[in-house]
Length: 343
Image (tube, rainbow, N blue to C red):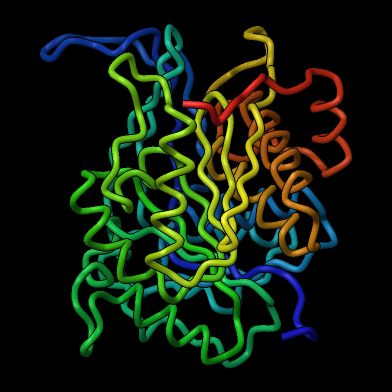
């Protein structure tokens, strides 16, 4: 494993149609879309492109299933343009690439996704062949977004467990990205995966769902102390070295030895924010890059927040992310919000 380098970004590869609207509409009304941006999306694409924007020389590989259509060709073109190796990203003849309509509401920064699975529904563990990869880390997602993968598979709880078990057999460390869905469904799909992970980078709601704990207060704000407790409970269910959970106010990371590290989010001025779509993926990319480079956890959180903050300067999921040096310069310029773990 020491001879390996880079990240294999596998699972969900799709095309996002990012649409900006002034406010969320009532049903049966006509409403103007203020701007439309087409970009790659999904956990696989976003991680791959964010890592390449952070460090163009960092090795990144793609793995997944797309359609043999215009959207699939668009994704291959994006990989070529940014230096992402895509021999393991397969196009299914006659199939439709997964697509997402992502609505970004200007008045409150909230976002809502409508997705069509296309060939992503047909992806199975048999689509994952790790025999040729030179990557050190597998980034895998998204449970809940792939019909066949979400089902039991040859004695395993679901296809995601089968893929993670296979990856470990080839010497890959693994991180899993989750999809924010119903808490019960998230726990059903995610908990069986935890014993096969080396790291877990999720948001506050997702860590709470895995732990069976509420992490958000009645007013919608995050209870950082509850997040820290949920991290401990998730670690006890799995094999992760570290688990980290991010939220608008900051992030908390926890290790198996009981240590916890907390850091407030980047204090972006409102005038610099174009949208939050992709900020969570950018946080994960900054964190995974720093973990790969074996940085101390405090520095991992700094880069993760800086990367997330940089991403919010653009409506699309990846266009705002800059190099490691540029992201850290933004952190130095704007600083971090205060965050305490006290109840």
